[in-house]
Every structure is written in structure tokens, then in C-alpha cells.
Image (cartoon, rainbow, N blue to C red):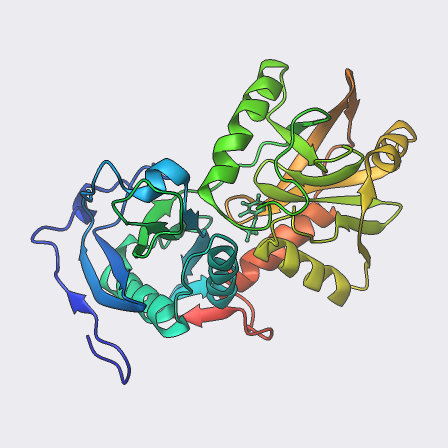
Length: 355
Ligand SMILES: *Cc1c(COP(=O)(O)O)cnc(C)c1O
């Protein structure tokens, strides 16, 4: 495949695995489409742009990414409309964010045309892997990692950028129980919390596991220095509707600037809902929970879109939130975003890339 600026070598699979796929029974993140895109960074340039059958990679035991975690990723989704078009939601936002993460991790930027053309070619070649069913989607995983064979401590000089995809089923988001974490931290001021880098997720697993032993699904992360401010929930941004005001933590270097978060805030403002992006204290949330003023709370992120919160635990007390009603903001947001993603309403905000 050649465009004005770049050439992608395509080697197709001899036998598609698509006929073996049960579209009615899709586990999350375990089934991978036929092909993958990759590009290699060497001597200051991206080269070897190719799409090949999805297969294991080989690399040296001294690969730097394994030892020191110079590795970043993105997560986005594509949807199919009734005409068999594929619609990718806000892909350029993920491209921009990948490059922000790359910058923080001393990794090279990926040019927009390589990211977007690689994505386009991959999705059109594997067109059949984007589920056409309502609620289903194609999860897209772009990522970049160090490839130097070297165990000295410095940034790698070579990298690999890749994209693979997974068809995923309808996400039944049972309301989640969250615990306000006051000991462990996900991210520190000046740290890497705003980068989607591998190490952040490794470090978050133990606190989540501890919360799960106490009967919670995930933790609400608080700031790393004082645990006074609410930041995120698990791997989602977190929002509260209190006295009809939509409140969420302002982005900072300890908060991941979510595309879903951004999109929800845009919709809320269009709907004339009062929005506050600011520091949110644990105290004000606990006070509002005690007074029954928290009307709704929900996590926002690509996987679930909106995940309603049923309980919030703080220092041994569990607060129950009101049940989500059909006209709740949680549901309105979910419906509005699905309408855009599945092409049921005009894309007036320019959020869709069509393939
Ligand atoms: C990816 C991610 C989010 C959500 O971002 P989206 O772009 O909405 O998917 C929120 N928090 C963390 C820590 C994340 O890694």
C-alpha cells in the first residue's frame, strides 16, 4: 500500500481465523484479529512499515522494555454501522496522547500519518473483525516499546510501534464498589500518572487486589502526597453528580487525560449541566455521601464508556449510592455516546474517522 508519503508492506494471512470466531460470545481482550501493524524506529527514523499476520514476536532477553519499562500504550474502539462502515472514535486524540506519553518516557513521537494510515489499513484489511452487533466493538491497542539489547540505564535508541485489535462483546457494567484509597498511590506529582506507560499499571495491581479482598471492585486513587484529593478510579476517570453539578478532578501530571472524560464533559456542557473541573477533596465527597447529596458517581473510560458506582467505602464505612434510574445522567451519557459511535446521529463534533 502506498500513499503520497508512506509505503506499508502487507503480507496477508494464508488462512483467516475469522470463521472460528463466535461473535455472540466474545471475551474481553483474549481474541486477536488476523493481522497486526508494526513500524521500527532506528537511527532517528521510523521504517519497515508493515502489516503481517498476528503472531508472537522474538526479542532478546536483554530487551530494555522488559527490564526498565520503557513501554507505552493506547486503547480506543471502532464500531460498525448498518452499512458496514467502520467508525473509529476520536482516534487523533489517542495519537496525540501516545505522543505525550512518549515524550515523558524519552521515546520518539510517532508521526500522525504512520499512526492513522497504519490504523486505516489494518482496520480495512480486518474489516470482518469489527463486530456489527449493537454494543460490540473492535478494541484497538496501539503501543510502543524499547527494543535495544542493552541493560545499561539510558533511553533505548530503537523502538517498535505496533497496533493489534480485539473484537469485544457488550460491556455489561454492573455498578462498581469503590474504596477510597488512603495508603497506596497510583501516581505522584511530577511522576508518570498522566502517561499511559506500562509501569503505572503494574504498580496499581497490588492496591486493587487488597481492595478486592475487602469486597470492593477497585480503588479510588487519591493524591500521592496527602491522600486528600480524589483523582481517578482504577483505570478510569471519575465523576460525581452532586446537587446537579458534574464534578471531576482537573487534569494534572498525576491524572490520565481521558478521551471519554473529555467527551462526557463536552456533552454535559452542551446540555447546560454545570461542570466543575477542579481539585476534589475526599472530605467534600464523604460529607456529600453522608448527607445523601451524591446523586450519581461513575467511572469513564474506553472499555466501559460509563461505569456506574453503587458503593463508596472510606475508612471502614461503606456508603451506598442511589440506584441508577433510566433518566439518570449516567444513562443519558451512555446513550448519547453510543448514538455517535454507532452512527445513529450526525457527527457534528467531528469525533469519527470513517473507514
Ligand atoms: C486509559 C485511562 C483512562 C481512560 O482514558 P480513555 O481515553 O477515556 O479511555 C483513565 N485513567 C487511566 C489511568 C487510564 O489508563
